[in-house]
Amino acid sequence: MLCATEAKNSPNNYETAFGIASGTKLFTGLAVCKLIDAGKLSLNDAVWDVLPYALGQMDKRVTVRHLLTHTSGIGDYIDEESPDIARQMQALYNQHPVYLWEQLAYYLPLITPLPPKFAPGARFGYSNAGFVLLGLVIEAISGKPYQQYITQEIISALQLRHTGFYRMDALPANTAYGYMQDQTGQWRTNIFSVPVLGGADGGLYTCAQDLDTLWRAVFSGRVLSGDMLQAFLTPHVSRKQGRSYGLGVYRIDRGTNTAYYALGSDFGVDFFTAYFPGQRITASALGNTQVNTYPLLDALFSALL
Image 1 (tube, rainbow, N blue to C red):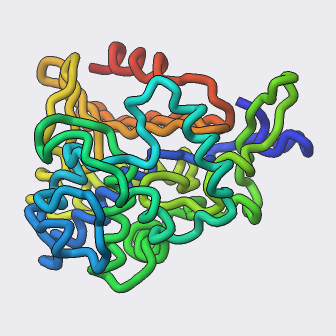
Image 2 (cartoon, rainbow, N blue to C red):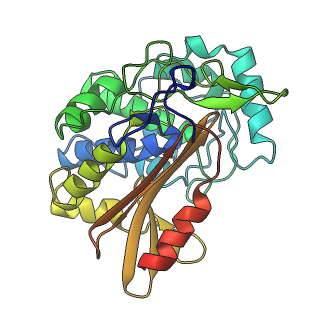
């Protein structure tokens, strides 16, 4: 991990905000579940019926549940199942400059022409595009921009003081820049390699203290009703080695013990956060390089479960 701002040698602390990339999907999942809780949406609603857009080749059987559980099979603007994802992402941003990625509707022309990868519900297939569509669902139902809804209903409501959708070209104080090494080994910021403003599939900034507050609020019933929380946490799709996926959150079961977690990785971003309800422990790793902290997460599972 580099200093928050390498040029100024600024130290990190528990309130330093870091980009969390796909860790944002945890917030998106909670927000969709809040709308379901309020009776404004259901898991079985067809996305074609909810969104006021032509969705191109997307299968008309795709539901909100499919999107939340990564089982929609829709084509993805970044195919995370591809072996050359980093090259694919950089090529995408070269063609569509990152300073243009400000609104979720911008993503639609990148998604709707793509053919389905598999039939809805056939299997798990990690999907950034699916969570972009969930952000658009939030906008359609709430009448507010996705970032505004998340800010009002989760960030401000829980008093997450160092969490937000910060513009890459206007990061506030005590926020870590992301760093990448170029071909010469020189460290450079990731400002030209990630969207200028985060969306429903990634790009939020937060800190270790706020993540602890979020997990404890979720498990104390301050975010969702009891029934909706149970649905959010329930394994909807089985993975391997005791892992599963709920409605926007990963889960691991070992014996009678369970942990929940979220992950994120991007240019200049490495992230995980986990909550162990049996021990009431939050563990988060926030990095501003691409050092892989996933082994640390596995070590935590082995030590605490």
